[in-house]
Image (cartoon, rainbow, N blue to C red; front, side, top):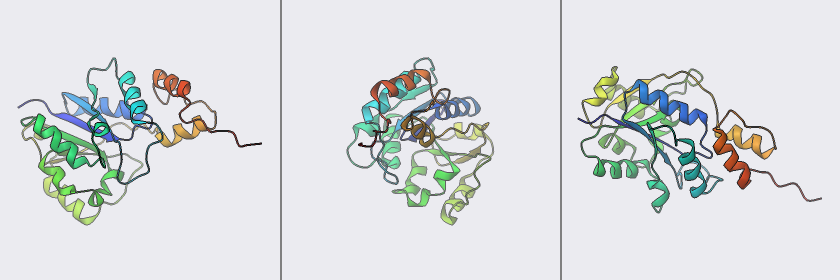
Length: 217
C-alpha cells in the first residue's frame, strides 16, 4: 500500500510557521509521503478570509518552494459552494483509491466536528489524526468522543495498513503561532517577523493586505 498522505486544511490567512512546522513534524512522525495544505474558499463555520483565494494560494506556494514534503492543494478554491471537508476527501479518494489519507486536525477543531456537514462521512474516506496541544483540553462532544474511542489506534503504523476509518492521537512539540495575532500586528503596523516565512511577509507587505486604513481626519 502507498505511504499515507496528510491533509491539513484551514484558511491560511496567512500561512505561517506554525502551519508549516506542524506539517513537517507530522510528516516525520507519521511517515507521510507528503502533507497537502488545502486552503478553504468558503469556510462554513467562520467568517470569510481577509486575503483573496489567489493571494493565499500564492503565499503557500512560495512558502513551501524548498520543502518537498509539503504541497499546495487548491481544489477547494476552485470548487463552487461551501468548502465542505467531506467533499474534498471524496474528491481525493477518487483520485487516490488505494492510498491512506490522514486528515490532520487539532482538538479545538474536533470539538466542533459534530456540527460539520456529514461529519461521519469523513471516516469513509480518511483516517483522522487528532493533534493534541498542551494548552488545549477542550472536551469532545459525546458522539465525537464515541467515534474516537471506537476507531482509535495507538500505533501510527496502523494508519498504513488501511486507507481510511481510524483515529490516531499525536502530540507534536508545541509551537504557538496564530493567524489572528499576525493580522493584528500587521494591522497595527508592528513587526510579524519570525512568525511566518520572510518571503510571505514581504508579499503581504507589498500588497498591503492586512493594513488598517487610518481613520479620517
